[in-house]
Length: 236
Image 1 (cartoon, helix red, strand yellow):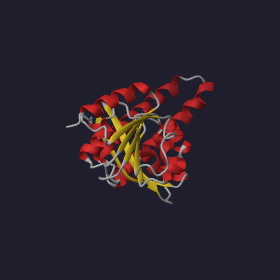
Image 2 (cartoon, rainbow, N blue to C red):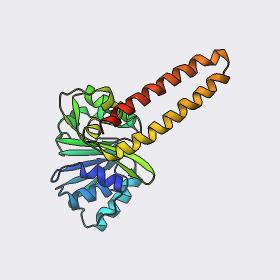
Image 3 (cartoon, one colour):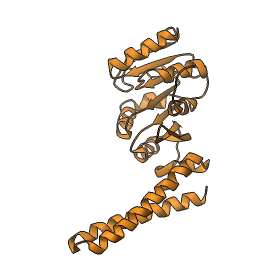
């Protein structure tokens, strides 16, 4: 059994069985190994911009006697991936802005795939916005809590669809499916935002006149966030 974390398993499980895959930013190569051994991937390419992770991935691939099925490739994003070479891809473990950069540099390659899975660690609304602005849509999503952190992962396909503001912020499929981990996350966010509003109220009473406007704007933004979260929670 491939030693894979709950987060990485959730990412890999969004790839349909039987698809060839490129793991972009492969780290130790465990996602590629899992996809081949558990998801019937006929071929996988473990790709990374740094030689260190590729060497570790190659060691693990050899350990599982899968050098004939999984190859490694030094690449900045998907630059060294040939168009049509794989059915799907995974981009996980990096920030949202870098994720968008990788997509933008190889847009036609991703449009030629059957799907790809993203799991950015930051700027997730930015990633969703980019997808829908560039001819993609989120077909499925999941959210897990692993080692003290919440992680979101999304399977993307070519589609001409729109997304509303709630979906951009918290995930259209997560909301639609009433994902229990999203509900847990939203409840925690609600408590945090309400505490911040209360703290801001105290700060407003003591603030100098020239600082009150900025505090009022921040308070208004937080109250809007609270309104959005309560609306979504009411549907779950």
